[in-house]
Image 1 (cartoon, rainbow, N blue to C red):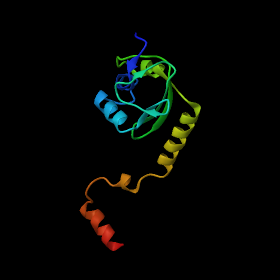
Image 2 (image 1 turned 90 degrees about the horizontal axis):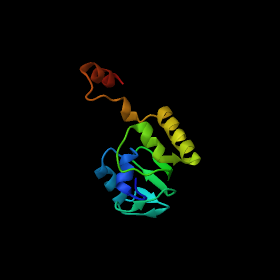
Image 3 (image 1 turned 135 degrees about the vertical axis):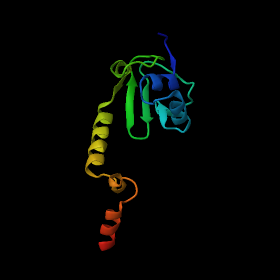
Image 4 (image 1 turned 45 degrees about the horizontal axis):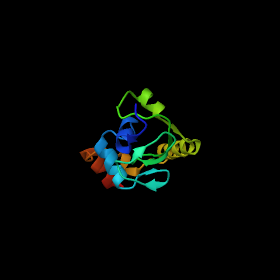
Length: 123
């Protein structure tokens, strides 16, 4: 293991993104910050760096604990970082709100059936 790893490789190895391309796109669009600064995908990550990651569904604040450029199983990848307490609480609150206040379109499953259309017409 080396002292530094490219940011896009580390995000992929830590399983924040499914592919390096998705990680690179997120970094380029400013959704990933290292120590509060917007960076490029080739930026080297060091142990102790703080990352702000917005992967679309969640926003993470993590501290880099270990380095790896190899994607491994999720329990092993979890050892690469430590999430801050504020981030854990915020993600739990967002998940609870998502569960309680579902999107109205989440209940629709494609085109309404003939029976559904008749019931809508009665309203």
